[in-house]
Length: 309
Image 1 (cartoon, rainbow, N blue to C red):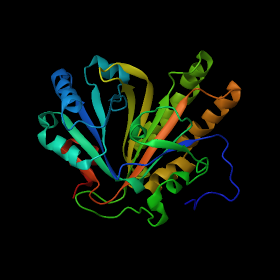
Image 2 (cartoon, rainbow, N blue to C red; image 1 turned 180 degrees about the horizontal axis):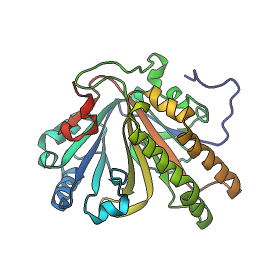
Image 3 (spheres, rainbow, N blue to C red; image 1 turned 60 degrees about the vertical axis):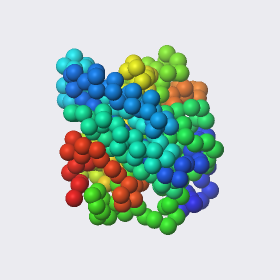
Image 4 (cartoon, rainbow, N blue to C red; image 1 turned 90 degrees about the vertical axis):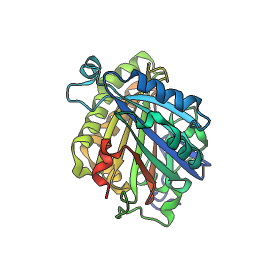
């Protein structure tokens, strides 16, 4: 389906998308925050790596935008919020994990899980190479459904018969939208790295900060993550994780808001100034959840708690 693709559209650069998604993917973000949570994190990591019901793919990150004092101040105060990002190809295995994992019930730990049918997923990236996220569970293919407004919706199979409109549901509304959008600069040469941190990354942070502080955009929660290895060492990679009331809210910000347009146009101008293909790897994954497709553990700790009926 390509309902939004302009007639005769030719993308300005190659791109690849994930295909062959699991029938239903269970994607959990498990958060733990506190100055003395080393034991809790060790328990979570052990459960997520050693359990018979461990996820099929696991990543780790720290949240870097939850405090007005800034990232360095938060670390100094011991107030770092860590998140494990876990993907299961079988929701039944995910449920067994949740039922048996004592670490999920520790103080300061909460979990947001999206149960995502295959036809409600989409991804895009400018590379075939390995990246974080659900692409570790799928294969990828070249696509021309990108580089135009509405392409994300076109890449989602269920959009052929569903407008994904926000509707009441229980315990959470139906058609909540979840995005994870990443940036990897580990392969950038010195000049591109310098331009990224001087020009692109500040605008990226400004856009995420705007979403996180302005609920009327439809963004329920916006988190900026510094990605890590499982030992907790920082990687040269970040991602934005955002919950939106619906896909239309995310599309409206992407298409027309000055904070996103600043990111978009600064990246394009940076590529022109480099005069060569960039090494910066950008990617995203977006899903729209049906009623019952979002599950919370210790929901009072989650920003989504405001939506629970």
